[in-house]
Image 1 (cartoon, rainbow, N blue to C red):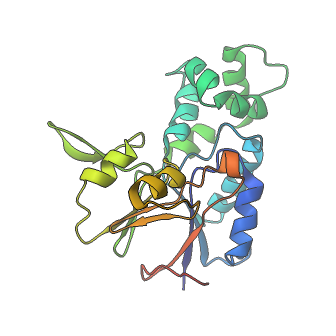
Image 2: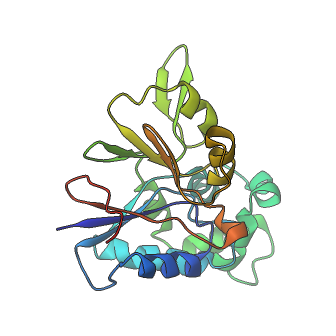
Length: 232
């Protein structure tokens, strides 16, 4: 039976992810153990190159499913030249990723872009292969949630206002599993508790553990029948 190990928002922090996967019973050699990233794999941390290598390894084994987060878009837009990256370098930690992936001698934004694309000619395609959602039984896995406008109604958006999504979106008979927004404020303001554990409210599960600060990753496990496995 396949088991899906779900994580999100590691932001260039590989060791906390590996530690938590080991705790949850993830077997590096078991082809039935699948990684499911809910996005924001890069930026802010200092293990971005290692994170990329880790993800690529499991992609080659067909053991990786990737939901695209907004930070994954930051890197993709930079590499494609549709963004100069300056805002995200200054405010969102993109600079750490670019420094790790580019030639140390690259001393301008243009040279960093060229260097990364030469070093990792597969990276744009890798980022473009990320998907907006993955469904398993009653669960739908996304990055930030759904957003609403009067033209399109509700639609998936990887920069969605997650608290608004929780308060206004009707999950009906599904459960939405997401990252993007830290669980600590969700647990406090929605449930009145102080906790870094996954946020759980009927129809919603949030797992972003603010890894860049806490150095901890929340990992959930689901089997191929769409059942959450509390103790693997």
